[in-house]
Structures are given as structure tokens and as C-alpha cells.
Figure: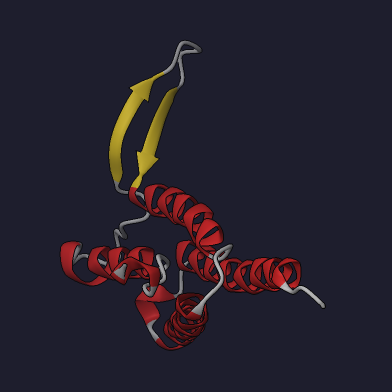
Amino acid sequence: MFLAYVPLMVVPLLLYNAFAFAIFGDWEAGFADAALFTVPMVSGASFTLTVSATIILMALVLLFFEILKSTRIGSANIVDHAFATLILLVYVLEFFLVARAATSTFLVLTAIALIDLLSGFAVSLRSATRDVSVG
């Protein structure tokens, strides 16, 4: 039940910060291009999955679950929206104030957090109008 109150967009934020500040000390090389694995394709090209692409893909999957969470009605939903607003504020402040967060990967994660907040409000409002009964 505790996860009902925790916005899942905090996971990509923590993961990005772990890679940007703790794991990769040499920031000039960056972690965005760090390859997790490379797969040779039938066409002769090779596909390389990077750390930043993996974080973005994970954020998109978590966005799907956040939208599913926003369909429920109750006090947990209100708390979840309040925390999602705080998480978006952290994303925006970190993007503008922290040098290591001024990357395109972090901007995409910030946009995903914004979409999470807006879609959560929209889905909740739409669900709440269906729940209202007169008479």
C-alpha cells in the first residue's frame, strides 16, 4: 500500500543521479554514451543500448504504471499527485541549477515527469466525473 503514495518518477531521478554523480567520476566522458551491451543485427549494423536510453525507456514504462495508478479515486490519489508535483519541481530545479543535469537525457526525463503530472490530473478528473451521481 506504501507504493500507492510514492510517485514512480522518483526512480529515474535517483538512477540518473546515481550514474551522474557516484558511478561515473569522469564527467567529460559522460555516461550517456556508456554502452550496456551491443547486439549485431541481421542487417550488418550493430545496436548499442546506452545507459541514458535505458533510463529513458524505464521512465516510459513507469509512466504507464503511473497513469494506471491515477485511475483510482481516493486520498492516496491526492497524495500521489502532491508528491508528483514535488518530484517535477525537483526535476526542473535540478535541470536549471545542477551542471551535471543539464543534458538532453535529463530534459527528456523532466518532460516525462511533466506528462506524468498532467496525465495524472487529467485521468483523475475524468474518472471523478464518472463517479459523481445525482439524485
